[in-house]
Amino acid sequence: MFQNLGEAGWKAYPTAAVLRNPLKSTLLGGRPLGTDEPSNRMVKDVLTERNLGCAPPGKRFVADSMLGKLAKWLRALGFDTHYEHLKSPGQLDDFAHRGYRVLTRNRRWGEHPAAVWVTGDDPGEQLRGIVTALAITPEEVRLLCRCLRCNSCLELVTRKQVEGRVPDYIFENCTVFNQCPECRRFYWAGSHPSRMAQWLHTTLGWSLTSEHQGGL
Image (cartoon, rainbow, N blue to C red; front, side, top):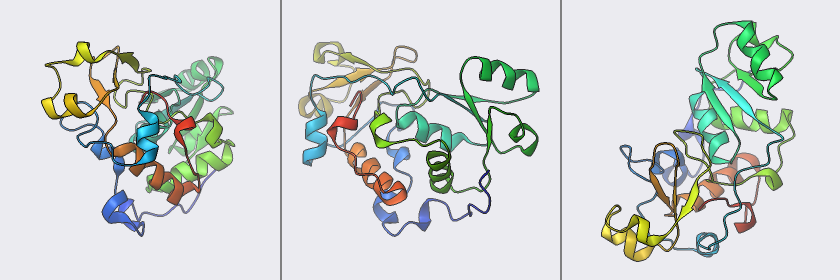
């Protein structure tokens, strides 16, 4: 159980001008990921034809309806994370039977054997608590390999498939594109992978490299 996690929010971090809610830059008005040309070595390393896929299935999560930002961060790290309105113990039993850990703000559900009770409002502190409690390591991370909206693993597509369907500047300056098989949105690497990696380093002390990248 994680108590007194604070309510400072994204603005609490010292590099807030750069890192404040980096997830916001990944989906703009329902449009695909990225609007910036890759500008550093880490992002350039990610732009390969190698698609490492999603995170290993050993850790799978269900986040209740009060943990939307935490759910997005877990998806961004590559973990299978459902976002559900939990109404009955039977739902928790079903998810537990399927191998999911339930993350909840509800003290009632937090008593379930498969549940982790999370308190506080700061997504960074919530994520840090989950990472500590469930022993999540950087080696399990596949950054940005899932659709943040649908939770589906992204699929590599050719440049020909995206021609005329993404802005011309993006098409000319990006070489690798992925698509969500559910919502059909296209994703590409802009500046957000490096901002996310920097935020994760500040929040969790992780130093992610291109080996931890997934679809982007």
